[in-house]
Amino acid sequence: MSPTNNNQTFASMNLLITGAGFDIGKALAIRCAQKGAHVILMDKDNRALNAVYDEITAANCCEPTILKIDAEEFSGESSELVRQQILSDFQHLDALIHTANAAFPLTPVHLLENSVLDKSLHLLHTLPHQITRELYPVLKLASKPSVIFTSHFSAHTNKAFWGYHAGAFAALEALSRQWANDTRNSGFSVNSIDPGEVRTIIRKKHYPAEDQAHLRAPNDDAIMNMYLNLLSQDGKTRTGEHFTLAALR
Image (spheres, rainbow, N blue to C red):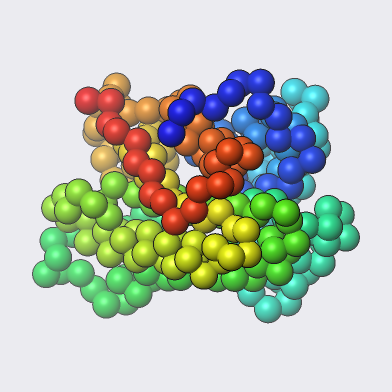
């Protein structure tokens, strides 16, 4: 994808970002706010959300909305309250960007435990679908709604010991394509992004002694532009695609 026009504005756009308290989610929330978007920050860490809120408001950007909620509980009454709040305050949701992630042990495949496999599939695949499904009624009210799923290199590289993640993220990419095909005639843009090797809290848990010199920062322009391109008017014409950012090394 071509670089995003730095002068591009997202004014009047309402974006909900999961995992907005940390890493790529945080960086994207700040970048979108700087471009004029109203950002709804979703995470379960109140302190992290408040820090992002303060950074955005200190820059005189549009005041964001904090949505402190455990994504695992985003169903039933809680999701209905969120939908009603979006309808009341903004009338629709222009985009939903999934950046929340979770760490699971790096384990040889013959030692994978069923209970942990179930949890990884739930958090990394089923939960993003559930959130998208629950917010579908307010997304479809937008003229050109966008959904972006954030995937992971383990879905393609077949690196040893990534069994808990690889299957879940591969399923997430398949689900992204299914959402794209099923909503194509409704004007939706649904795509997935693999941002590559990034200096995140999750990666630090997996590789605590890693030399991070070859890793991109979460707010790296190359990463941000992948998301911003898909949120732009031109990007909204694309659907059912997967984008991968090549490693620095």
